[in-house]
Length: 452
Image 1 (cartoon, helix red, strand yellow):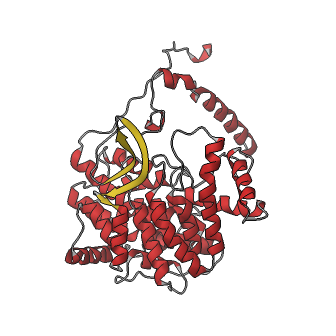
Image 2 (tube, one colour):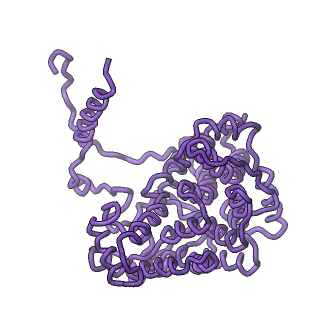
Image 3 (cartoon, rainbow, N blue to C red):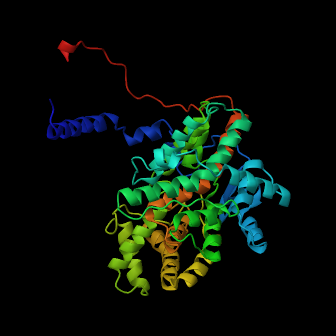
């Protein structure tokens, strides 16, 4: 028998062997012109598919050259700025309307929107005893794992789980879009109760409320929220709903859907991708970084002291020593992230209501200083600006949303985009996605056991 101490020692030794034999010389990637991360050297993504769902623009073509421009995000051809403005002017919540647009390709009229809201409301229910038997059983501190477990278990309650006809897939997607807030919040409450010994309560959603209002109703003990809180959360959901076909979790949805698998498995795979800190966890890192800054900068109104801390971040001398200023820069955008631009004004309004205007001004100061510092300390091929994650974590903290739910907030919005891309993949492509990998291992001669 191997005892626990020996087990760890053996595994560490095997892990070292695994790591050594998996390592590939970096120059070989250049030799064979491998696009690492499916990107070229400038960071531009390799074209892997076509989509009608959304478009990101960060450059303009002039005289055959790419010129950086203000970032633009289009949902089904509509500028995200115009969509948000329209909802604000008409004083309505945007999640349901924009979800309709992304799923069906057109903006709904009043009758279509009301019908869609009714569909979502009727889908906002879980199987009998599901909360008790699935969510409350073995609660996890990782809410993304909790949601994934719930999604995969829901397949057991669906007699047509494996049916990938478009009507059936659409019905499954609408149900998952509707229940995601419940899966996330109930999962958190179960963890908070059983692991932290806090009070446990389950609130029912109200079919007359928007997705944002219902989320706050489910989360808070008193079910109360202000109009501005619900409005800002609704905008956050709209801004995170979709972002081109090339982001990691959406591409995962395409890859997994191309195999012909069921909706529950495809969405669980997307969730697994999003939970990675390089994708969906960036807003948590921003909040943690800001907390570290407050502890280590004596005068938060002194630009030079803040600039010095930012330099330490880049030189791996502060916070997590990764050399990153979290929330700054984006894989696609250069001059500006339109989502951050839209969000900032509403964040300021919420900071006024919450009495946290000084903190908002600190965020604004870092947004101004960070690109200058990065330009001085790094060789960069494109501009650097604040991305949407820079402000979203601050918003969630002002809404008293626990840190464990920050990435699930992203998922609650992005499942709309995943659903649209899953359907697009099923409608248009009949081949499994299978990229090429070149083997760099030469053929070896097999040796019997007694000769090794």
